[in-house]
Image (cartoon, rainbow, N blue to C red; front, side):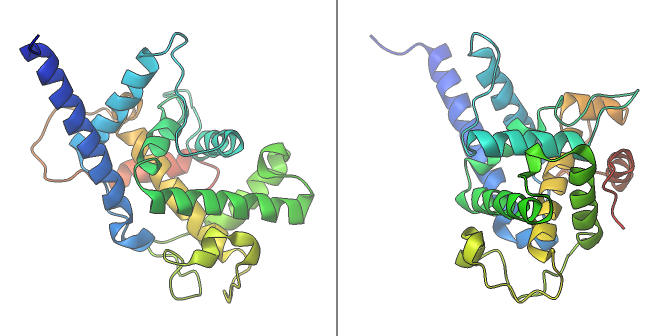
Length: 244
């Protein structure tokens, strides 16, 4: 029996979506954290659409993470909630599906996944050193204090980690033996937090909740989507972890 035109079109659409997500994920790490190119608006819509599709396919509308272990997933969700919390006007990055957005991108880019999971390992290691517990088990005050330190170091568009290149470092992917020569105590964590903060804000402001939050007025023809500076400033103003 031949395939119906509708099912063929659906399969083609799904393939196009997967290609768009894979391309967007690779683009994120193509130039390193310093330049951090924003993914296209259409690609962001594909990511959010894929998340919604996966939720709809489950009986309880839950998303199953692909790139992160349960502990890492819990940590990512907590970071998203802390970076862009809910306010009287809008929901949080967690409500907007930022963790799912990030997980889907990371599952299509091993380099991005390594950056994030290595950074999570660093964050837990540092929290244990300072407070004796992993990040998710710390008190609100301990977690805020840790992220305040990282936000202060991660300010600016191109945080200098103090060593040539963390992105290609195999040692960074195995943090416990990382021979850092950074001049700043929290430099590896600051680089990680810079990535997470930008990803969370991008995910939030390309979601329906984020679009409504900035009062989007309608479509316009653009080549790439870049989160407006005013939107970034608004998100970081809401966040306890503002750029310095």
